[in-house]
Length: 229
Image (cartoon, rainbow, N blue to C red; front, side, top):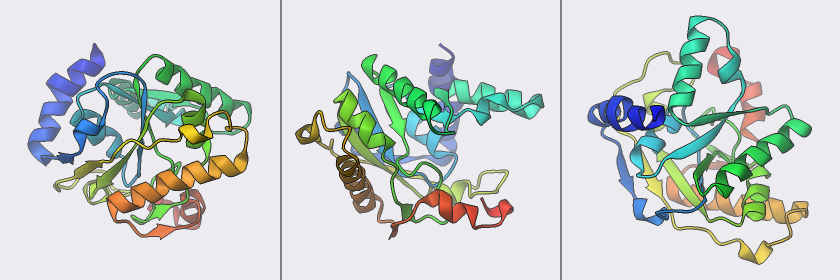
């Protein structure tokens, strides 16, 4: 109920009226059943504009730190995350990563829309980076369609390190579903996982027009000053 109110009554109409996001390919999202929306990640606001711009309710997996920060700011962040359909995950690796995978699979088994950023983190410079193979494993284990989604110009609205959004018009390009049924039952093969991930990233590059850099975005961000991460 809270999600519905945020999307349809409170935040959604306000943000649409102010920023006027444009969307193409919305009919590529099936009307029902589990589906993965695999998106590039340019800005924090990607997780806001995509959910309010599609008809179906969707869920994103977000790092658990967003839900555990203390104080008023922490409370407000937690409130916002829950209101926009975020589920906390532990990204520390090992058993925590397995639990995160299972959380995503449960969402898909419930016939819901799951949003994933294959790059694993926001791009530090608007380039597209190497994908993490967790998405491939989720695609192959769930057997649901995966749809590439390109967020356009959202980094101009909320650049990394900025406190307040700038008035720009973002875009969302929703591609055709990708079929990986030929790899069914092969989620234990790391070469297959890499091939599936790379194909998703390739489709994102085509939709977004971003320059591709074959390294992980996290490694690039770690080399930048703290204020620029």
